[in-house]
Length: 69
Image (cartoon, rainbow, N blue to C red; front, top):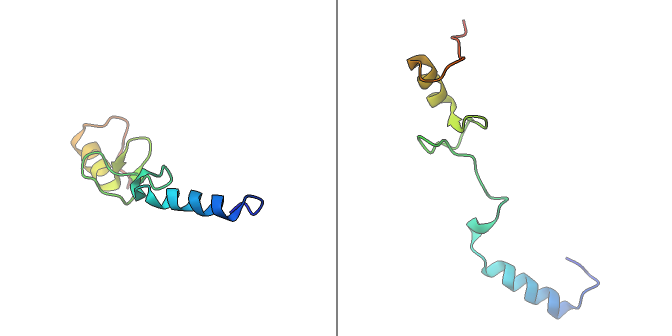
């Protein structure tokens, strides 16, 4: 994207970037539940999905949670 560099150098850099595997980028990292692998509604502090957080807190495995009513 740098227009001050020569065109050949920019093209070479672009081809090298295109050869890298897609999942090697840090930006593409996705938060997944460590128990189920679910990718939606994952709580960062626990790395658990909403469903597993509810189940484990209901079973008494996680402390400090109270049922909301």
